[in-house]
Image (tube, rainbow, N blue to C red; front, side, top):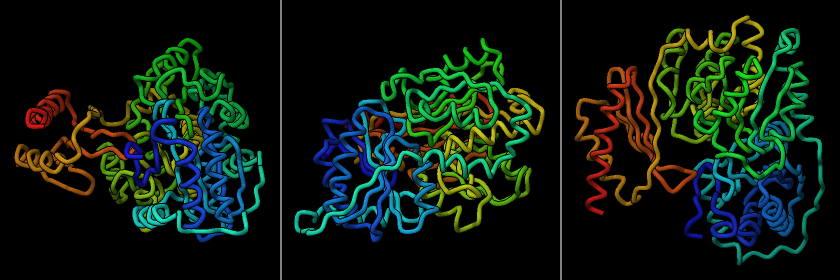
Length: 449
C-alpha cells in the first residue's frame, strides 16, 4: 500500500499493484463505518478495472450495514450533484480521473456533495487503520439504479438558455477518450439541439490517448473540428469533471484559457466573487478586475475551492485544469455544465470561439511535472526563496512567488508521485528565463541526492 497516492483528491494507484480488490474492500468497510448516513451512492468510470473494484468497495459498505445505491457507470459531477441534492446520502466514485488507464482510484464524497476535506479524510483514515477491531452483525441492502445521468441532465437544462442554443443548431465534435462521456455526451448535446460528431467513443475504458484533457493530447480533435467545419470541439477526461475547448479554426485552447473564457461568461450572466486555486492562470485576476468582483485563491483541490466558494457566496469558480464549478447548479467540477455554458456563450454572443479568445490578454503558461524526492521539497522552497528574493512569496500550497508580470509555483502533486511546476508571464522571454532558473535550483538537489 506504500505506493498508493492518498490526498484530498482521493485514493489512487496502479490497479493490481498498488490498488487491489482487497484494498477496495477495506476502504469500503472503513467508509461505511465512518459515514454517519445510512445510504451510500456508488458509481464508476469506464476503466475495465472499475467493476471489480466497485464490487469490492460495495461489499465493504454492505458489511458495514450501509444501504447501497449502485449507479453503474456515471460521471463524477452527476454523483456529487446527487449527494448534494439528496438528503442522507454519502457517495463514492471509482475513478482515477485524468490518470493513465493502468491507474484507478476511489473518490469519497461527504453528505454535502463535496469530496472529503483534510480533517474528514484524516478521520476516515483513522477508522480505516482500526477496521479489524470492528464487527458488524446486520448487512445493508443493495439496489441498482441506471437512471442517474437522465435525472442529472434534466436538472442541468434548467440552468441554461436551451432555446437560444437550439436555434443556432451548433455543430460539435467531442472526444470523451472512451470515458463516461462516450456513453452520455452525444445524448446530452443532442438534447441541446447540436449536430454531434463523436470520436474515441467506442470500446469504453480502452483509452486511445493519454486521458488528461490538454492540447498536446487532443490534436486529433482539433484536426477533425477544422475538417468538419464544426463550430466548437470538446475534450473530456474519463470521469467528466474536466473540459478542454477547441475553437472553430481547430486550435486547441489551453485548459487555463478555456477555463478563463467560461468564468468570464459566467460573470456576464451574474456578477459575484470568484474562487480558484493558487495554480490557476493570472488571467482570472484580470477578468475579475474588469468585472469589479473579488477573487479568492485556495490550495489545489476541488474541496478546497468549494469550501471557500460556499464561505464567500461565489458566483463562479474551479481549477484552471479545465475544472469549472457553477454553484447555481451544484458545487462540483463539471464538464457537462461547461459544455452547456460554452454553447450558450456562442449562441447569445453570435461570436465564434476564435473571435472571443482574441478579446482576452495573452499569457504564456508552462506546466511541468518531474520526479523529486519529497524529503527535499522544503529545502527546494528555501532555495527558490533565496534565488527570487525580489518576488512576493506565499506558502499556501507548496510555494508561489509573484512578480510584477509573472509568477511561478511548485507543489507536490496530490494525484501522482511528482512535483508540479507552474510558470506564467506575459512574454516567452520572461517565462523561459524563470523556467531556466527554477531548473537550476532543482538540478542542485539532484546532485546532492
